[in-house]
Length: 261
Image (cartoon, rainbow, N blue to C red; front, side):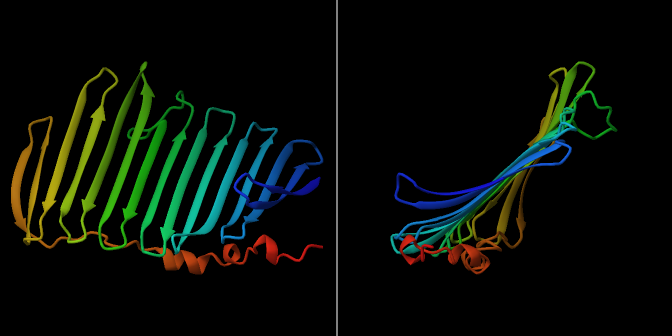
């Protein structure tokens, strides 16, 4: 079963879409796939897809992604985003989202959030979790300043309570290499007991780095060390990589360029 159509969005963008639906011969599997391309006369272009399905085993899933490009104040921008989710009907579930944005001035932003859980009654080996999360992100101003962060944590069920633990860090630097790196490792017991250790580094371009930290179990440090400052001034994968990789997106035609059948 297949259907195609054309629609005009409120902002004037023309979208051409196709939907394909299918069912397996034994009716055990159902799925739907929608994909589209969209554009306007001002240089906006978009490709996207939505997929979903279910089967007789109880598995359910959906997936969305979109990439687009546009001109804004004379600068070209690219944006990519995705959202995926799945469940097996037995208490296991996962979800993942990510986003990327680049412009021709060198500015970039990227982030992702991943989450997964299994049935909390599942027996586990020590150190393993029933739920875990991960978030990370990066922004770059195009002139050498950047911000990065990572945050991971996990949760484990047992004996009528939840034990949780995690690790996170972030760094924030200006164009001259002055900035801060800091982080925390933590644990929380099922009866409310807590432990954590925090650390930090102050970078001021002097060749000396101020390192400090403490923990709830009594650790403490505060030192100055001679050490070079290193941080990521520009993204590994930036605007020009994205431009080169987006061949299909760049080939989307404006509405006026299409030869209608």
